[in-house]
Amino acid sequence: MIKNTVLEIRQVKKYFKDVKAVDGITINAVEGEFIALLGPNGAGKTTLLEMIEGIQYPDEGEILINGLGWKKHEKELRAILGISLQENHFIDRLTVREVTELFGSFYTLPIGRIDEVLDLVALTEKQGALTKNLSGGQKQRLALGIALLNNPKIILLDEPTTGLDPAARRNIWEILEKLKKDQGITMILTTHYMEEAEYLCERIIILDKGTILAEGSVHELLQQFDLSEKIVFVSDKTVTREMVPDNGLHALTQNENTYTLRIEDISSYLPSFLAAMKEYNIQYSSLECRKMTLDDLFLSLTGRSLND
Image (cartoon, rainbow, N blue to C red; front, side):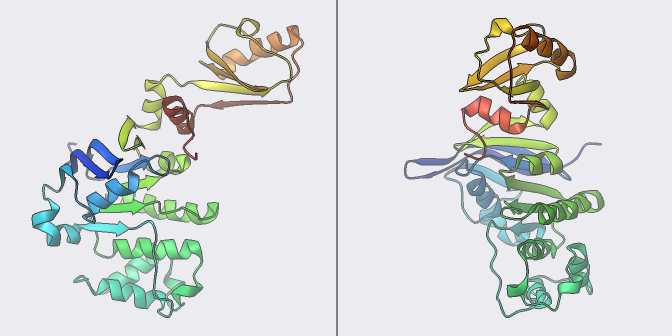
C-alpha cells in the first residue's frame, strides 16, 4: 500500500555565525513512519527539529507538512502536530490533571480525552499529584501526554528519554510502540541513544555537523558499510595480521593492548582464531564477540563515538 508523504524537508540550511547547524538536509517521511535522527550533541538534531516545529525558520530550503508551510499555515499545522521539547517545565503547584487540562484548553477536545491521555501515559493514578513531586520518568510521560492531547498526525520528540533510568526509558518506548500500532502516527525522534533508535524506528538518519552521513534501517546501514561482526580481545603480547586467520577477516586494528578483528561471521571464524592464538601462545585477559552496532558505524564514518 502506498502511503502519503506527510513531511518534506528540502535542502534546508540554518547557520549561526560561523556554525553550520543544518547544512543542506533533505528528508521525506510517510504516514505511520518512525524516524530517528541519531547523532552526538551538536550534530544539528535539535535545530532541525525546531525548524520542523516552526520555532525557527530555515535560512534556505523549505519544510512542508501535509503540503503546508509554516509562514502561511501556522494554525492548521499546530492542529496536527504534537511536540515534546528537550526540556519541559511545569508549574509546581498544579496537579497532573490540572496541567493536562490547561494544555487541553488550547484545543477543542472531545469529552473524555483528558482521561484517555492520562490512561495512555499511565498517569491516571497520579492525576492528583503535584507536578513537583513527580519522578523524572513521570514528568516525561506527562510531557508526552500533553503532546498527544490533540490526536496529532505527527509527533516530534526531542531527546525524550535523556537522563531517565532504564526502566523509565522502557516505559516511554512501550507507550510509543502502542501509538504506532494503534494510531498509525508518524514520529520524528532525536536521540543519541543507539538502542533507542534501533528499538523504535524503522529508519535511522545519522547526522553529524549539520549533514546526513547515512540513512536506512539498522540492517541496511550495517550492510551498506560492510560492518559485519567483530572480536575484541586484550593481550600484552603483540599480535599481527599474519598471526590471525585470513579467511573472513576484513581488518585487524590495535589500540594499545586492545585488538579488534572485523570479520564476516563470528561462528565460523572463532574456532580457527582460538586455534591460532594457542599456536602462537597468545594469552588474552578478555575476549568479546559481538555484532557491529550503530556506534561502530558512526566511529567508522567520523573517527568519534556517538557519546563523545
